[in-house]
Image (cartoon, rainbow, N blue to C red; front, side):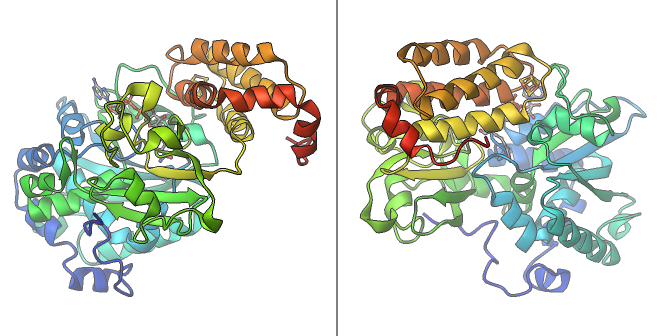
Length: 441
Ligand code: L3W
Ligand code: SF4
């Protein structure tokens, strides 16, 4: 079902501005939270079952309760707005049209965690959204929701917006922290997790934009009520950004009880595939998660209907399942070439690898070169086995998840679409003819 939680005021003109947001119930959750004990806010978030909306789905309340509290050491909250996962643009929508729900969520979360200096690390390409956020922060400050002695509680909080410089890896939380500290965005080894040693080695919570915005409805309705939306461990609403071969691309909010088939074909959401084409495959959670062929998309490994939630999407593991990931829903029709698609992603991960670990630095480049050869009609049959071997040596052997993210799309493409790889090897001339101007890649 469609959910109206984060985007419940989507239809209201001017909801981007403080006065309108306030008139429609804005900052009521903050009013309530500032009268609560900090531990009780954390408890509400735990009860809500909210899971991280950036990709990993880690329980937010649990992450908050890991935050170390050594005497005299400042703690920080960092909002990860470095939305760079291919196919993912739901945080952009939220920040562009609903900046105050994020600012309110940040205020409540900062209060709960004891962060007096909170940062929004935003993707550099979202330059125009920096202005929107800074305008919203100014408005909130003028209304007494930020700054010193907020609403007479004695709590001080400033929110700083920091622009990234175009590196995908800075969305990985420890690379983000390094970048925020003014250094090159190289991921750190974990543990220690940021909750123990994060920004300037201080205890830090890093949460995604959508996760922090969800704290507002959780406080408004109470954790238990929020947990009633959705199903099982997939509580609350989820934003999805839809792109690819669908009639209605865009951002949708769902309650995670809808089936994948309904999501793709109903007019309320994707509206089906254009020009009556057949569905070939789907990547439901951003480019890093495994691609699923149409014949495995609507049923789980047990033969049950597959739903748009964390558990159902991953049912069957990598053999037949995939992941909710960041909610970047990419749909491919029958005309799309899986080899070309996989090559494009390999090129992306190779370009974005920070180069610290050899399996990722060397492996991503190697996979890209092999895929380019196969796609361009210059591949050998043994290249398919070689590709499989390289991706296996990357997965699980790197400092950060970019290595896995580069390996999984290749593994899933070979597992489910081996015939397309073989077709390119067996049809070099046709492959070269189809290879429309890739020389510059
Ligand atoms: C304290 C422990 N904290 C785990 C924390 C950890 C992190 C969170 C999840 O990668 C995925 C990646 C992308 N004590 C803890 C602990 N934590 N154990 O929990 O950790 P983890 O390692 O499971 O994931 P991650 O490093 O956050 C995120 C995938 O998301 N992804 C893409 C993301 C891209 C975007 C975007 O553009 N917006 O989000 C898509 O699937 O591949 O696997 O905070 O510190 N014992
Ligand atoms: Fe850098 Fe890749 Fe290693 Fe991550 S996996 S630290 S991006 S080299």
